[in-house]
Length: 465
Ligand code: 6PG
Image (cartoon, rainbow, N blue to C red):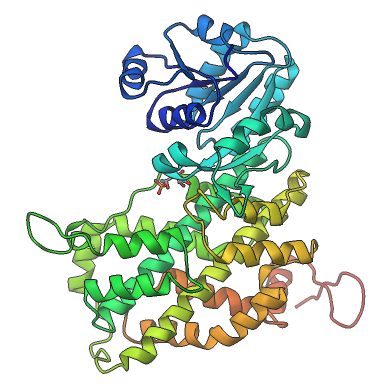
C-alpha cells in the first residue's frame, strides 16, 4: 500500500511527489487529466512512485487512514476535488491542502469535512518549485492529533535547518494557510524594501548594476543574509543576450500578483493591525501597474530639479544597508503582530517562535534574522511587538537614524520609497507616547457626539462644543 497520495501533478505537485518518493515514502499520484500523469511518469521513475489514471484505484491504493495531499490551484476547484474524494474515503481519512488557499476557505473545509468524519489539514507550502522538490517550508494546521499522523511524512520532506524540520504543528482550523498568507505579505515587503534600496543605490548613488550585485552579495554575508537578497544579487548579474544590457533593465516595470499580499492587508483591516509596510508594498505593485499613466505624469508633473550628485558613496552605502535592515525588522514586526492578533481573534493559539523557526529554511523569506525573531518570542511569550525585544531594541535604536536619512534623502530628491518610508512612519508612530488621536476623538465628539475618555478621570464624556 502507498503511504500517501498526491492529487494534482502541476510542477508543484509533481515535485512534491518526487520529493516524497526520493525520501523513501511510497507515493501514489493522480491528476484529473492524464497528460500530466504521463509527463510525471516519463520524467520520473522510482519504485516508490505509482501513477494512477483512475481516482478510485488511486484512493484504494492508500494505506488507512488514507492521506491525500492536494496540490491543486487554489479556489473553487479544491471544493470540487473534495466533493469527488469524499464518497471514496472512510472516516478518519485525511485530506491535506497544500495550495495557496484562502484561510477562510480552509476553515470552512475543515468544518465541512469534520462533519462527515474526515480530517482536513491546511498546509501552507513555500519555496517554489525547487523547494517542493528538495525541501519546502511547511505550515500545517488542523487537529494536533491528526497532524501527528502526517508529521512523519511532512517533516521528512520539509527543509531542515540545524537538524530541525521546517515544519511543525501551527494551530487550529485553517491557520496554516493564514500563516502562509502573512508569510507572503512579508515576502512582498521584503521584495519591495530590497527594490527600494536597489533604486537608491542606482539612482541616487549612481552605482552600476554590477556594483550593486557585488554590494548585495557582500550584504548577504552579514545580518541581511536571506534568500531574497541572494537571488537579487544573482538577478543583477544576468545580461540580456539580445541587447547586451542588464536583464533587469529590459524587464517591464509592472509587477504582477496573485492575491496573497492583498489578502494579508485585507485581513489586517479585519483584525485591526497597523500593517502599513506590507500594505504599501501591495500598493506599490498596483502603482507599478499604471505604467502608461506614470509615463504621462512623468512629463506633466514636476518634482525636485536639483539632485544631490556628490553623496559620499561609502558612507551612504552603509546608511542604505542599515535602513534596509531596519525596514525589514519593522516589516517582520508588523507581520508577527498580525499573527498575534489573529491568534487571539480566532482562538488559534499560534506559536510565534515556532513560525519563525519554520521560516528559517525552504521558504521564500528564509533569512538569518529569523533565529533572533524566534529567540525573541521564545524568551518572552507575551512579547507585544518584536521592536520591544532587547535584541531588536538595541539594533533599531542604532539604525533608526540611517533609515531616517535615507527616507529624507529620497523625499528631498523625489525618489519614491513607499515601504522604507512606511517603516520609518510606523517606527515613529509606535514609539510615540502621544499619538494625536485626542484630536480625532474631539472631532468625532464635535460632529457626532461619539464621546471621549479623559486623561485625568475614568468615564465617558461628551461636550456641547
Ligand atoms: C512561496 C511563494 C509563492 C507565491 C509566489 C508568487 O512561498 O513559495 O510565496 O507561494 O505564489 O511568490 O506570488 P505573487 O504572484 O503574489 O507575487
